[in-house]
Length: 472
Image (cartoon, rainbow, N blue to C red; front, side, top):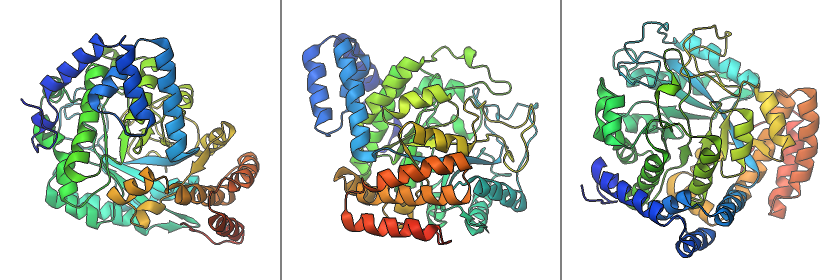
């Protein structure tokens, strides 16, 4: 079908023919220094890149230009997101699912895992456990099952989570990762006060998509791919996209991912709030070796670097699917959010996970939240639990306008320090608290606005006296 970035039809704004032509163009020009340099100059001017320009850089096979790609990605990350890393945790509510996805252990035919749907009281216990770790931001996850997991259950769970106040803990932002649904249901989620609506495409290759989703409502490629349009129409202006790398060739997925971002920007005036980068991992009856498009760490890092320079204002996420070593490498090239202390089973926080439990995938980075906070500070980053933009209605195009003008730094840097201070006082180990105290002292000097810096310093002192939840 003809490529049309403004079309509402999935096969037109994600055009198979355009992706194939883009990959061919990139391969033909991967040694074309003039074209590569021109694309890098455009990226350096913070104008972003088209899917074709970005694919050219991804294919680039000239060492000195590849080095420039990574250096530029690191610089753009610093310019827009500073040295902050936002922390969150996933919360699995139910693993009931009617789909037949061949890469996910929640598929309907899997009789090995126990099917669990948490009650509101069980959710309460999980959330208190997460609050006691120090989390302020959650991403709730559940399988697609209209009987067991209706939208009413999701909405009730969101209300339960927001209502829980335990000691000094509270969840201030709930992001939602549920199956593609209707405009009406997206409107209900928006009215419930969610942060970002997240939905991974899994693969943009329609033929592969339909083979990987042989049964269930998720089999409908168009309905799934057009979900973000319906979410926007339902009032949700912060959406998060991503693919599961390993299901199709990484060149195809990369082009499709950026075409989706271009479509949202062109049609709604705001691109994705976040892009996530999961790779297929082992889980129960799922063997990642059965999928022949896996990518190594070097390619993975280049995908992340090329994404950062192509969509410089977008948040980028990597989960505990990846190892400490991999996460430490790619944080420098564009990642701005990571999960920490994660469990991927239903009910994994309040009670220890058991072998052959209900995990959606095996976790590689199994460190506690305190250990991850300490590690981030040791490698020069500010762990942030900030949720201020969502609560101050700096979402969608309002967030992007502030980000593009770099004014967002006046909010994010002090907010990160104040939320880190809360974590240090309420949850941190003595060693983490000591490192954090010194970091906050240093980083206060980097708050750009003097008046904001003085107010931030005052609030940080007030946190020691028991006050909480300051933000700009």
